[in-house]
Amino acid sequence: MSCDFSLEHYRELLDAAKAGGYRLSGFDRPPAPGDLILRHDVDLSLDAALKVAEVEADADAWSTWFLMTRSVFYNLDSAEGEDAIARLCELGGRIAHHAVWPQIDLDDRFEPVVAWHNPEPEYMTAPIDGATNVMAAPWFDPEHYRSDSNQHWRHGCPHEQLGRGEPEWLQLLTHPEIWAYPGKTMRESMESFLDADRAARLERLRADSIDLS
Ligand SMILES: [Zn+2]
Ligand SMILES: [Zn+2]
Image 1 (cartoon, protein in one colour):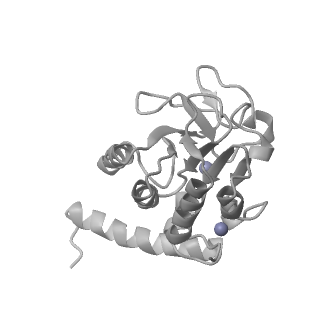
Image 2 (cartoon, protein in one colour):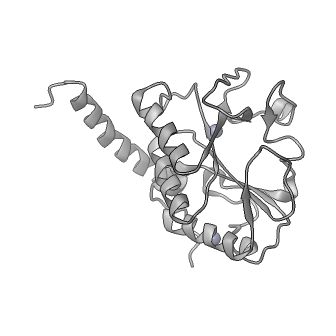
């Protein structure tokens, strides 16, 4: 098994967690022994989120999707954004807010759960009025947290430990763009994303009655 950042290996990770006996959970109650909290911060692409969500549904898994209202890469208020939320929910996902400090745009699309985008240490773990901060205790604890930031696991890919049921519980943060678009490096994955995005934008131009002849 190669620990690459691909949809295939994401599926293997989910299967490992199942073999390890984990129960999937969210941020609506404090983590308990045996919990695996799957968290996705969607920074760049709703299409990538949907691809990962299909893999999860196929594996009888679900997760919490942290979506941005202030992204420069996608628009949650567009028809595509509304469709993406509907589909993520249909596949069993929960919707939470990936916020750009200091703005919080919690509305009825979101559970009252916030993950800051690229947080600074000063506010990363600070409590948030009326919402759960996923990087505050008890949901966050460095011993019970893994993240795939920039295609780098600080403590190695967690699939083996999950398969052995080692972490008593775990919050696992993954970024769908890293897994949905192929690439051995972050640069390569981003090039794949940009290629797919260009093709998608051409289709949108067509749908917008732009003459591409
Ligand atoms: Zn692995
Ligand atoms: Zn982010």
